[in-house]
Length: 147
Image 1 (cartoon, rainbow, N blue to C red):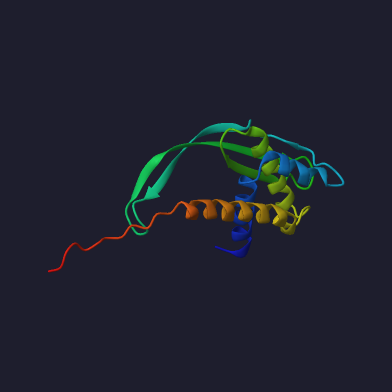
Image 2: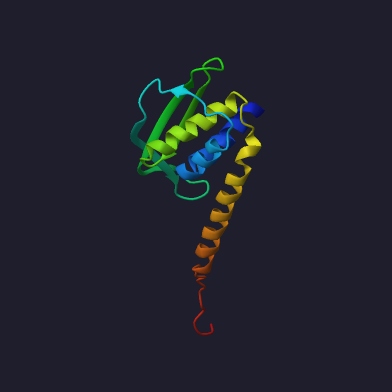
């Protein structure tokens, strides 16, 4: 996989985890709002979530998750296309994420513009990890009697 693909995967992951209000804030800071159309309507569907029994265990189907998909196409800039997949049913979040993806692909927005969003995501992840760690229980086995 080349660097451009891995960079796009990184920003798409960030956009998928960012609420619509934060995505709108990024677009509001642009000097000119992009004009775009939706080649197909925003779609909500299901996707199978897979898990593993342990770190190297066999995969299994955990269940289905709601997923919303959006594709936008700019009316200018060589009809650049942006795509987004987000968890849940928030069509506005999917649309805004697709617009920002298209802005990043067309280089009208730099990936560094997403850095504050990544920091918030990492802080939330760290906070959840600390909450989970505080409830961790260590079990140990006692040996009964002497042999």
